[in-house]
Amino acid sequence: MTKAAVIGAGFGGLALAIRLQSAGIETTVIEGRDKPGGRAYYWERDGFVFDGGPTVITDPDCLTQLWELTGADMKDDVALEPVFPFYRLNWPDGTNFDYSNDEVDLTREIEKLNPADVEGYRRFLEYSAGVYEEGYLKLGDVPFLDFKSMLKAAPALARKQAWRSVYSMVASFVENEKLREALSFHTLLVGGSPMKTSSIYALIHKLEKDGGVWFAKGGTNRLIAGMVAHFERIGGTVRIGDPVVDIETKGERVTGLACESGWRDDFDAVASNADIVHSYRDLLTSTRRGERATKSLMRKRYSPSLFVLHFGVEGTWPGIPHHMILFGPRYHGLLKDIYDHGVLAEDFSLYLHHPTITDPSMAPEDCSTFYALAPVPHLGKFPADWDRIGEEYANRILDHIEARLIPGLKERIKTKFWYSPKDFATDLNAHQGSAFSLEPILTQSAYFRVHNRDDIVDNLYFVGAGTHPGAGIPGVVGSAKATAGLMLEDMAR
Image (cartoon, rainbow, N blue to C red; front, side, top):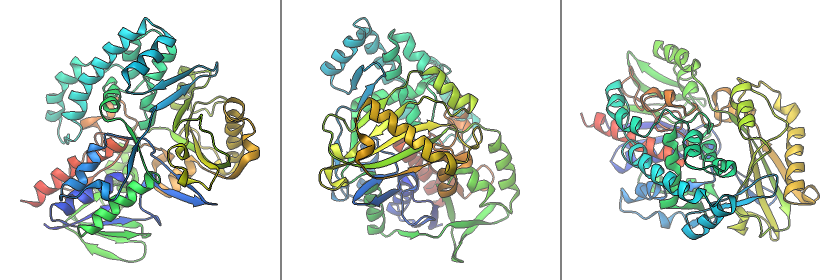
């Protein structure tokens, strides 16, 4: 077994393909869109460069490993630059909180909110280090294929109270509500509600503290381009703009792939970085396995979607950092509206991305590139006509940013467009337009997530946000390591 295919050129798919090709497996990546990247797609409009996301790069070591497998250096293809502060958090009353890994600065920021919480934060950080050790270093790239593996991990997870939510655990250490929000919002960047996501995800703080927060010069799209360049340099093949339409099987084994253009080929193994429901429902339509897996997946909970407003503006804003979180007047209530009620609320919390503060080349001279991201219910909970309501929602977001942060913003806009739940569903085949696949709750984690190798079709594998360990760049790159290990072990038999 020496020939493999990977469906989808997102971070997970490319990381897996690099690992396979580095090990001597003839690997082909097949991407349906006109550019690689998956959710890390990008656009160039009127001289502005807009990353689709993700835009927060943590644990750069998990990326450099992909080059080191063949003795190469990621710096030859990608320039990573540190982002500082990591995030500026802002509340409607004007309070700012600059979050970073600088101990002196961070202590000063916490003291401004509540001096009594400094010691509580230090205890929270100790807790974060513990779950980082158990949940990321030990389990982040280990495939959970059977329940025994889950039972083996259970005692350590139980000691860390993994059944509690991130917010609940944070609240046990600090008293100030703003600080509780500052230490729990990170789960939203991987699709989870702080009120429901397992406290294991508190490991993100340790991950950021040790590894920092980074940005790829030119945008996240340049990291994708670097991965593609490295993959092709070591002999891999990438097919762009030809969606896979069928995973061909015989009995309980994959035999090959067929694409929309009519192209097909035989493969010893296939891994899908595509949406998990799309993979089973649409690409395995003629199989009993596809039908049964789809029924099971339909019963699961999916992460919300996103409304991402991209805009290029005249002028520069040196006072606006690379990453901002603009909290709304509600935290708990807004999250309930999004995750439980399926309501498009009147208020919102926004993640504001301002890459030109770090790399001015992403906009014309004396201009700036921004995007504002608002979590919104997925189409299963809020089946709205986004073609109809998108303009109004975009204007509401711009009005909010104008009133709160950038006076005269709308008069300065040179170009704008948005990406809605409908686009996630159509462009990325994302079930219900979810932006992060399965919601990262405890009962949909590790063994309870889609397995890195199918339980029935033994040469069909999965990588990406729907598999263990979950969404986010470190998560999907970790899933690639787990899946590659399985594939190489199976191919060596």
